[in-house]
Amino acid sequence: MEKLAIGKVRTSTGVRGYFKVLSFSGEFKHFKKLQGEKVEFRFKSRIKTLSIEDVMVKNDNLTMKVE
Image 1 (cartoon, rainbow, N blue to C red):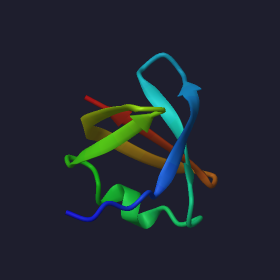
Image 2: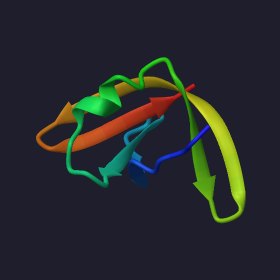
Image 3: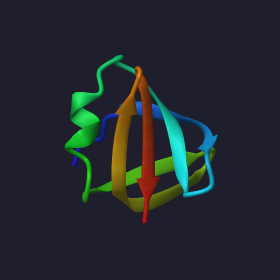
């Protein structure tokens, strides 16, 4: 399966487990389609596969929550 990087985790936000995401394309619609899907997160050499629980867009800010 081919993989494509679509964004970068910027920082955590609030106390409910959400984090801000920087979209590489500047678009947000495709992130909403990821809700309920499993995605791969990479940090240096570590890789984790997590399910997207919620995606919110407010004022050109994208926030996500994983299960």
